[in-house]
Length: 243
Image (cartoon, rainbow, N blue to C red):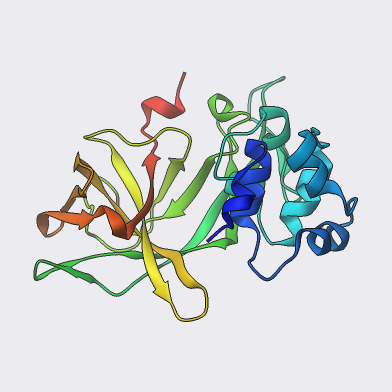
Protein backbone atom coordinates (compact mmCIF):
# COMPACT_ATOMS: atom_id res chain seq x y z
CA UNK A 1 0.00 0.00 0.00
CA UNK A 2 1.26 3.56 -0.71
CA UNK A 3 2.73 5.51 2.20
CA UNK A 4 0.19 8.12 3.47
CA UNK A 5 2.83 10.79 2.90
CA UNK A 6 2.83 9.85 -0.79
CA UNK A 7 -0.86 10.74 -1.04
CA UNK A 8 -0.04 14.45 -0.95
CA UNK A 9 0.88 16.49 -3.99
CA UNK A 10 -0.54 16.60 -7.48
CA UNK A 11 -2.83 13.89 -8.91
CA UNK A 12 0.03 12.83 -11.19
CA UNK A 13 2.39 12.41 -8.22
CA UNK A 14 -0.23 10.41 -6.32
CA UNK A 15 -0.86 8.21 -9.38
CA UNK A 16 2.84 7.46 -9.80
CA UNK A 17 3.19 6.61 -6.12
CA UNK A 18 0.31 4.15 -6.39
CA UNK A 19 2.17 2.39 -9.22
CA UNK A 20 5.65 2.57 -7.68
CA UNK A 21 7.08 -0.77 -6.51
CA UNK A 22 7.44 -0.71 -2.73
CA UNK A 23 11.17 -1.51 -2.84
CA UNK A 24 12.03 1.18 -5.41
CA UNK A 25 13.08 4.56 -3.95
CA UNK A 26 11.89 7.62 -5.86
CA UNK A 27 15.38 8.92 -6.65
CA UNK A 28 16.53 5.49 -7.88
CA UNK A 29 13.44 5.21 -10.08
CA UNK A 30 14.13 8.62 -11.62
CA UNK A 31 17.83 7.92 -12.20
CA UNK A 32 17.33 4.48 -13.71
CA UNK A 33 14.55 5.77 -15.95
CA UNK A 34 16.92 8.44 -17.26
CA UNK A 35 15.25 11.53 -15.80
CA UNK A 36 16.33 14.16 -13.26
CA UNK A 37 16.80 12.56 -9.82
CA UNK A 38 14.87 15.45 -8.22
CA UNK A 39 11.85 14.86 -10.48
CA UNK A 40 9.58 13.44 -7.79
CA UNK A 41 10.45 15.98 -5.10
CA UNK A 42 9.77 18.82 -7.56
CA UNK A 43 6.52 17.24 -8.70
CA UNK A 44 5.34 16.74 -5.13
CA UNK A 45 6.32 20.12 -3.69
CA UNK A 46 6.04 22.46 -6.68
CA UNK A 47 3.65 20.67 -8.97
CA UNK A 48 5.98 21.15 -11.94
CA UNK A 49 4.35 19.79 -15.09
CA UNK A 50 6.65 17.21 -16.73
CA UNK A 51 7.25 16.58 -20.41
CA UNK A 52 5.27 13.72 -21.90
CA UNK A 53 8.45 11.81 -22.79
CA UNK A 54 9.60 12.07 -19.15
CA UNK A 55 6.40 10.42 -17.99
CA UNK A 56 6.75 7.72 -20.65
CA UNK A 57 10.31 6.90 -19.47
CA UNK A 58 9.22 6.59 -15.84
CA UNK A 59 6.27 4.33 -16.64
CA UNK A 60 8.26 2.24 -19.09
CA UNK A 61 10.92 1.50 -16.47
CA UNK A 62 8.36 -0.22 -14.20
CA UNK A 63 6.59 -1.94 -17.09
CA UNK A 64 3.58 0.37 -17.16
CA UNK A 65 1.94 2.73 -19.65
CA UNK A 66 -0.22 5.83 -19.28
CA UNK A 67 -3.27 3.55 -19.34
CA UNK A 68 -2.24 2.21 -15.91
CA UNK A 69 -2.40 5.62 -14.19
CA UNK A 70 -5.20 5.23 -11.62
CA UNK A 71 -6.10 8.92 -11.28
CA UNK A 72 -7.01 11.57 -13.88
CA UNK A 73 -4.05 13.68 -15.02
CA UNK A 74 -3.76 16.30 -17.81
CA UNK A 75 -4.72 14.74 -21.14
CA UNK A 76 -1.61 16.09 -22.87
CA UNK A 77 0.41 13.78 -20.61
CA UNK A 78 -1.74 10.65 -20.81
CA UNK A 79 -2.46 10.78 -24.55
CA UNK A 80 0.89 9.20 -25.24
CA UNK A 81 1.51 6.87 -28.15
CA UNK A 82 2.91 3.56 -26.96
CA UNK A 83 6.47 2.85 -28.10
CA UNK A 84 4.92 -0.15 -29.89
CA UNK A 85 2.17 1.85 -31.55
CA UNK A 86 1.86 1.89 -35.30
CA UNK A 87 -0.31 4.10 -37.45
CA UNK A 88 -2.42 2.71 -40.25
CA UNK A 89 -4.39 4.17 -43.13
CA UNK A 90 -8.05 3.23 -43.11
CA UNK A 91 -9.19 1.66 -46.32
CA UNK A 92 -11.00 4.15 -48.51
CA UNK A 93 -10.09 7.10 -46.32
CA UNK A 94 -7.73 9.85 -47.36
CA UNK A 95 -7.37 11.61 -44.04
CA UNK A 96 -8.68 9.17 -41.43
CA UNK A 97 -5.73 7.82 -39.50
CA UNK A 98 -5.95 5.77 -36.31
CA UNK A 99 -3.19 4.55 -34.04
CA UNK A 100 -2.93 0.87 -33.15
CA UNK A 101 -2.12 1.76 -29.55
CA UNK A 102 -5.01 0.47 -27.45
CA UNK A 103 -3.48 -2.14 -25.12
CA UNK A 104 -5.03 -5.57 -24.60
CA UNK A 105 -3.80 -7.20 -21.39
CA UNK A 106 -3.05 -10.86 -20.86
CA UNK A 107 -5.71 -12.97 -19.16
CA UNK A 108 -6.24 -16.60 -18.23
CA UNK A 109 -9.14 -18.56 -16.79
CA UNK A 110 -8.64 -18.77 -13.05
CA UNK A 111 -9.97 -21.17 -10.46
CA UNK A 112 -13.65 -20.69 -9.70
CA UNK A 113 -14.43 -18.55 -6.69
CA UNK A 114 -17.01 -20.18 -4.42
CA UNK A 115 -19.72 -17.73 -3.32
CA UNK A 116 -22.53 -19.03 -1.10
CA UNK A 117 -21.77 -22.54 -2.27
CA UNK A 118 -21.91 -21.62 -5.97
CA UNK A 119 -18.95 -21.59 -8.38
CA UNK A 120 -18.26 -18.18 -9.91
CA UNK A 121 -15.92 -17.99 -12.90
CA UNK A 122 -13.05 -15.54 -12.43
CA UNK A 123 -10.27 -14.32 -14.70
CA UNK A 124 -6.58 -13.94 -13.89
CA UNK A 125 -5.26 -10.64 -15.19
CA UNK A 126 -1.70 -9.47 -15.82
CA UNK A 127 -1.62 -5.73 -16.52
CA UNK A 128 2.16 -5.93 -16.94
CA UNK A 129 1.66 -8.10 -20.04
CA UNK A 130 0.31 -6.38 -23.13
CA UNK A 131 -0.51 -9.18 -25.55
CA UNK A 132 -1.34 -6.89 -28.45
CA UNK A 133 -2.39 -3.38 -29.46
CA UNK A 134 -5.74 -2.83 -31.18
CA UNK A 135 -6.89 0.01 -33.42
CA UNK A 136 -8.24 2.88 -31.35
CA UNK A 137 -11.65 4.22 -32.49
CA UNK A 138 -11.54 7.96 -33.10
CA UNK A 139 -14.05 8.54 -30.31
CA UNK A 140 -11.46 7.19 -27.85
CA UNK A 141 -8.62 9.50 -28.95
CA UNK A 142 -6.77 10.76 -25.89
CA UNK A 143 -8.43 8.19 -23.60
CA UNK A 144 -5.46 6.63 -21.83
CA UNK A 145 -7.81 4.99 -19.31
CA UNK A 146 -9.25 2.60 -21.92
CA UNK A 147 -7.84 -0.93 -22.29
CA UNK A 148 -8.88 -4.32 -23.60
CA UNK A 149 -9.26 -7.75 -22.00
CA UNK A 150 -9.88 -11.20 -23.41
CA UNK A 151 -13.00 -12.84 -21.99
CA UNK A 152 -12.18 -16.20 -20.44
CA UNK A 153 -14.86 -18.85 -19.95
CA UNK A 154 -18.54 -18.95 -20.81
CA UNK A 155 -20.19 -17.44 -17.73
CA UNK A 156 -21.26 -14.30 -19.64
CA UNK A 157 -22.43 -16.04 -22.82
CA UNK A 158 -24.26 -14.99 -24.97
CA UNK A 159 -23.42 -11.36 -24.16
CA UNK A 160 -19.67 -11.98 -24.22
CA UNK A 161 -18.21 -15.07 -25.85
CA UNK A 162 -15.21 -17.02 -24.61
CA UNK A 163 -12.08 -15.59 -26.27
CA UNK A 164 -13.72 -12.33 -27.30
CA UNK A 165 -12.36 -8.91 -26.40
CA UNK A 166 -14.08 -6.34 -24.23
CA UNK A 167 -12.94 -2.74 -24.05
CA UNK A 168 -12.97 -1.20 -20.62
CA UNK A 169 -12.74 2.30 -19.14
CA UNK A 170 -11.55 3.23 -15.68
CA UNK A 171 -12.53 6.91 -15.86
CA UNK A 172 -16.28 6.35 -15.48
CA UNK A 173 -17.50 3.94 -12.84
CA UNK A 174 -20.13 1.36 -13.80
CA UNK A 175 -23.78 2.04 -12.98
CA UNK A 176 -26.43 -0.56 -12.22
CA UNK A 177 -27.09 -2.52 -15.42
CA UNK A 178 -23.59 -1.96 -16.81
CA UNK A 179 -21.13 -4.77 -17.33
CA UNK A 180 -18.15 -4.32 -15.05
CA UNK A 181 -14.62 -5.59 -14.49
CA UNK A 182 -14.42 -6.09 -10.74
CA UNK A 183 -10.86 -6.15 -9.40
CA UNK A 184 -10.60 -8.39 -6.35
CA UNK A 185 -8.19 -7.98 -3.47
CA UNK A 186 -6.09 -11.14 -3.18
CA UNK A 187 -3.81 -11.85 -0.18
CA UNK A 188 -0.17 -12.30 -1.17
CA UNK A 189 2.54 -13.65 1.13
CA UNK A 190 5.17 -11.38 -0.44
CA UNK A 191 3.30 -8.19 -1.34
CA UNK A 192 0.60 -8.39 1.31
CA UNK A 193 -2.13 -7.81 -1.27
CA UNK A 194 -2.51 -7.81 -5.04
CA UNK A 195 -5.31 -7.43 -7.57
CA UNK A 196 -4.52 -10.03 -10.22
CA UNK A 197 -7.97 -11.62 -10.36
CA UNK A 198 -11.09 -10.00 -11.80
CA UNK A 199 -14.74 -10.82 -12.37
CA UNK A 200 -16.40 -9.73 -15.63
CA UNK A 201 -20.07 -9.56 -14.67
CA UNK A 202 -23.17 -7.35 -14.81
CA UNK A 203 -23.61 -4.92 -11.92
CA UNK A 204 -26.99 -5.46 -10.29
CA UNK A 205 -26.63 -3.46 -7.10
CA UNK A 206 -24.00 -1.61 -5.11
CA UNK A 207 -24.11 -0.73 -1.42
CA UNK A 208 -21.55 0.32 1.17
CA UNK A 209 -21.32 -3.32 2.28
CA UNK A 210 -21.35 -5.31 -0.97
CA UNK A 211 -21.75 -5.37 -4.73
CA UNK A 212 -24.34 -7.63 -6.30
CA UNK A 213 -23.36 -9.16 -9.63
CA UNK A 214 -24.96 -11.36 -12.26
CA UNK A 215 -23.60 -14.02 -14.59
CA UNK A 216 -25.54 -15.93 -17.24
CA UNK A 217 -24.00 -19.43 -17.49
CA UNK A 218 -25.12 -20.85 -15.15
CA UNK A 219 -27.64 -18.15 -14.20
CA UNK A 220 -26.55 -16.70 -10.88
CA UNK A 221 -26.87 -13.47 -8.90
CA UNK A 222 -24.37 -13.21 -6.06
CA UNK A 223 -22.75 -10.73 -3.69
CA UNK A 224 -19.12 -9.81 -3.07
CA UNK A 225 -18.24 -7.92 0.16
CA UNK A 226 -16.84 -4.46 -0.55
CA UNK A 227 -13.72 -5.20 1.48
CA UNK A 228 -12.79 -7.71 -1.23
CA UNK A 229 -13.27 -5.17 -4.04
CA UNK A 230 -10.26 -3.07 -5.05
CA UNK A 231 -12.06 -1.20 -7.83
CA UNK A 232 -14.62 -1.58 -10.60
CA UNK A 233 -14.11 -0.50 -14.21
CA UNK A 234 -16.88 -0.15 -16.78
CA UNK A 235 -17.13 -2.30 -19.92
CA UNK A 236 -17.75 -0.10 -22.95
CA UNK A 237 -20.82 -0.70 -25.12
CA UNK A 238 -21.17 -0.38 -28.88
CA UNK A 239 -22.83 3.00 -28.37
CA UNK A 240 -19.74 4.17 -26.47
CA UNK A 241 -17.53 3.25 -29.43
CA UNK A 242 -19.53 4.96 -32.18
CA UNK A 243 -20.31 8.61 -32.84
